[in-house]
Every structure is written in structure tokens, then in C-alpha cells.
Length: 403
Image: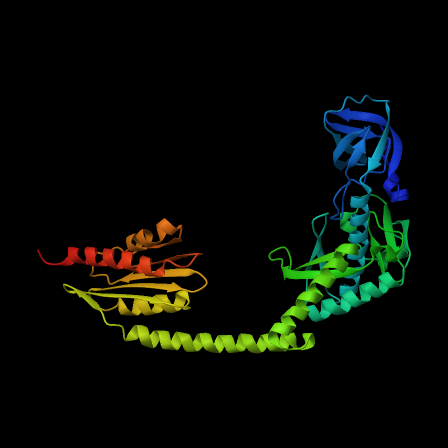
């Protein structure tokens, strides 16, 4: 039985070039006796680079055997090859992986029952998902702690211990996820001690800076996804956000520290305005004069800034009266269309009217014979849509006229 691949990336994570011997081949997958290519794990992407001058696009750990995908190779078992790691990419992931340790550990100190669910450390995105309470005030405290740890330039150390070692009890570790009798622990100064098989920077100072950029819902996997940046990207993003903050401050005429209060006040004022608009709109729609087509009463109107619920309620209320049909079109950030028809007005199909009005503009929606609603992202067609719908209502209402 062949022994497992020697993991040079664990012994020397800064190794960018190495020489190894091919010990197995399975199609495009090449197995070496030793490798500096990290096969990924713990949420961190695997390395890429080259082997014998050919691109390595994927690396996998198959029960201890590290396999490298090398498309178009003609390598032979026993052949000696030179491997090269894409170092800028590796360093970015090492910084982010070490930063993730510090960030979650800091959050965990502030929220004792916080649970780490999933990690994603890739060139495009650095994030993790957690279960537990989290808000921007907590995140700010954690960011401060992390960047203090970065400034302290603490050393990162690794050690392999038995599962029964007392040190394991002091660590962040999920024993059920770790096979074998030995556990690799990574200590970052006095800031964190966790079980991890990944690659990290030697000292926290190499991270440069960490910035939490976004907190979003992670349902159903967890409660929150925390996205962050490290190094030069974090610095650039921090400067960009600071500049945006200053620009918004000028627009609001408020200091950056008062922006949240100013925005909350504006949101409250906007809600009051919307409530007033809904009240006035209901009163206005309630006083609309019907257009008579035989025994049918047709209500049509263009409104501005009403929500679908308000339009639907008012149209449905009017359609409770006999021989009544309503077509309301609202235009604000997008266009909304509501059609309601009383059950006894059999000549008019609400859904057919809606489709005739919105289909040519790529709108979406649906309903049944007595009620339908839909909309589209653009604006500028409310008037023409209303006229088209009104003409169809008049035409179809005529079908109910006595012969």
C-alpha cells in the first residue's frame, strides 16, 4: 500500500517551488510523492499553479493521496517533475484564512454561543456563516480586536497532538469532523487556538488589515453571512467607503457620526409621507366617477407611488358592486397594474385584460377572471397602457349589453 503524499504545504506554507516524483496517474489526475499544492479544506480553495510547465487547475485530497489535475499531460510514473504554486493567490488566501480565525474568535468572545457553520475563502469572496446574534455594533468591536491582533504581529504556530491531549479541550474544535488519532492545532498568539488543516501566514502583521464589508441573512444554513476583505483590498475598500460617507454627509448636511440618525429620521418622514399618500389616494380613488357602458361601470386611473396592496384593495372594493370593472395603473420606480371585475360582468376577463396590457412590455403577473395583477421594471408607459386597457374594457363590456 502506497503511503500518503508528504504535505509540504503544512511544513512550509511559503514554499512556491518544489521537486517531486510522480507515483500515480489516473487520466488527468497526477499523484506525487510530495507536494506544496494545498488541496483545499476548511472552506479554503485549493491551490493552482503548474506542474512540469503545465497548468494545475484542480487539487484534491483522496484519503491522504493529493491528486493534481493536469490537462493534456504525458507524465509517467517515476518521472521527476517541478511544481510551482500561484503565490499571489496563495498568499491572499493565507491572509484571509488567518484573518477568518481572528475574526470569528473575536466575535465568539463577544457572543459566547455563536456557532461557525460554514467558511468560504476564495479569491473572489471571503466569508463565513454563523448561527447566533450579530449586529454592526458587535462586528465593530470584533473588527477592532482583530486589527489590534494584526498590529501586534503575533506569531502563528502549529502543533500535532493526540485527541486526548488537554490542549484539545482549550481549542475551537469539532472532533466529529476530524479523522484519525492526531489533531493539528493552530495557535495565533494569545488570540486564537483552533483545530485546522489549512495554511496560514507566519505572523498576523502580514494580514495588513481586515475589514468586514457586509452582513447578510444566511437562511436556512445559518443566521448571518459575514463577508470581509484583507490586505490591500481591505485598505482600498475602507478608503472608498470613508469617501462615500463624506460625500453622503455633504448631501445630508450632517457629520458622518450623525448620518445614521439623519437617515433614520428621513426614513420615518418617508413612511409618514407614504401613509399620507395612501390615505389621499384611497379618498381620491373612492371619489372616482365611473364611465358607463350600458349597465357596466368602468373605473380607470393612473396613480403615482401607490403599492400593490393599496391598489388591489381599492379595486377589489369597487368590484364588489354589480356590473363593475376597475383598471388601475401605478407608475413610480416601476409600473404596477391591477384589474378587478365583478362576478356578474361575464363579458370581461381580468387576466386577459392584464396580459394584453403588460405582455408587450415584458411584464409579469397573472390572476383569474375576476382579479389579476402584475407589473414591469420600467416606467413611461402608464398612460398608453391605461388607454389600451380602457379600450378593451369598453369593448368587452359591450358583450354584456342586451341584444
